Amino acid sequence: MEKKEVIGRLSAMLNALNTISVSGKANVLNLGGCIALTEEIIQGLSKEEEEKKEEPKEEEK
Image 1 (cartoon, rainbow, N blue to C red):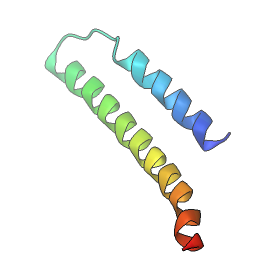
Image 2 (image 1 turned 135 degrees about the vertical axis):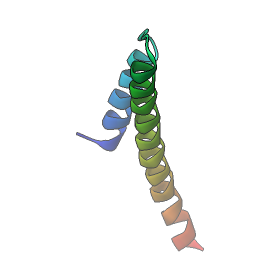
Image 3 (image 1 turned 90 degrees about the horizontal axis):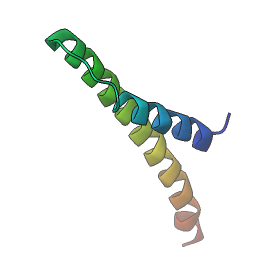
């Protein structure tokens, strides 16, 4: 599975998590933690992808 596909699937999962209604502090915290972790993973993968795109430009100089 390519990185773009992983990012796409994680984004779909994040969208699904954002639609879940919960009640109770513990459930809210668990859902919030899942959303935060998923967002961090997506950001890390996206940043890594951007850095790879920029590397050839630096080598050309």
